[in-house]
Image 1 (cartoon, rainbow, N blue to C red):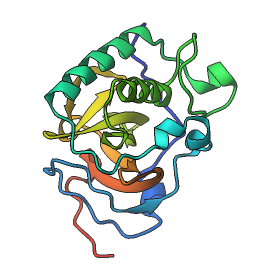
Image 2: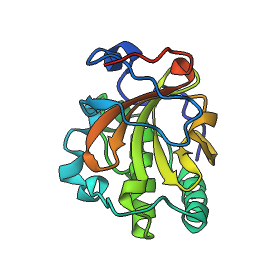
Image 3: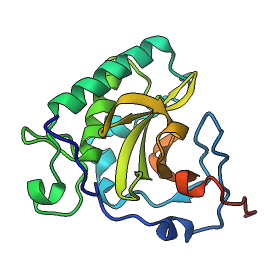
Length: 204
């Protein structure tokens, strides 16, 4: 990796835009796994994702959480992709604000890097339903995307800003949306993490 990509990655996201569709059912920040709350629209840049990359939306509902072998593989893939992929904004590369695609020879932004990691792990045999794309607000409340790996240790995060894989509760991020594990072509609000950890639970 040629340097840490500090610019906001992806279209601007706000908590208000996520909370608007329905009352919040806040997830407990101590949960091992991120919990889907209710259906939401897919992130703007993901339009056409399933058509262009069918594997990114292919579900394997029978899969059990990934174990130590998959995690060791994920550590290698995460570190390698971060090191080798130059980070470049979509506006600079495509002339548009947001476009989810595999990195080109020029590189890619956070969503592109997530896709590359997911593809490499699937090619190595990791179940697709254990590899969930998620949109978050990072520690500076900037838009970002990460790959959530569902393991027997809980949900772990592969991040283009960090070559260490950590539990989602240790990222300091606010998790907004995530692919539905049962149907990867759809998205759910998860609403958990840093900015929501003390938010009271509301009934729907």
